Length: 155
Image (cartoon, rainbow, N blue to C red):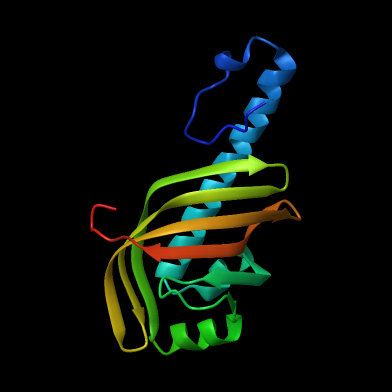
C-alpha cells in the first residue's frame, strides 16, 4: 500500500476494504498532524517564541543549510540567545507543504517564502525544505532539516 500524503484523496483508489480505509485515514491524519506541526513551529519561530518552538525540535536535530556547508547540529542555546538579541528573526510562510508518513517517521517538503535575518545578513527569497520528522511521546519533532535556496523566486 502506498503511503498517502496529506493533500491526496486516495481512499477509493485503494478499494472498499474497511481496514485499508482505516489505515489510509490514520496515515492521512498523521500527515495532517505533521503539516500542522510544521506550521505551528514556523509561526512560533517567526514570533520569536523559542519556548513554543523548541518542543517541535528533536534535541539531536541536524541541518544541511542553504549555504552548502557541512552537517550542523542544532544549538538551542545559541538560537535562544540570537532571538533574544534580535539577531535571529524570520518572517516566512509555507507554500506547497506536503507530508508523507511511514509509521513513526515522516518526511515533509515545501517552500518557505519570506525574509530571514541572521546576524547582519537579511535574505529575502524562497527556500526548499525537506524535513525528516520523528514521532516521540505523541509529538512530531524535526530530526533533520535540509534547506536549499531556489534559483528563481518562483521556486
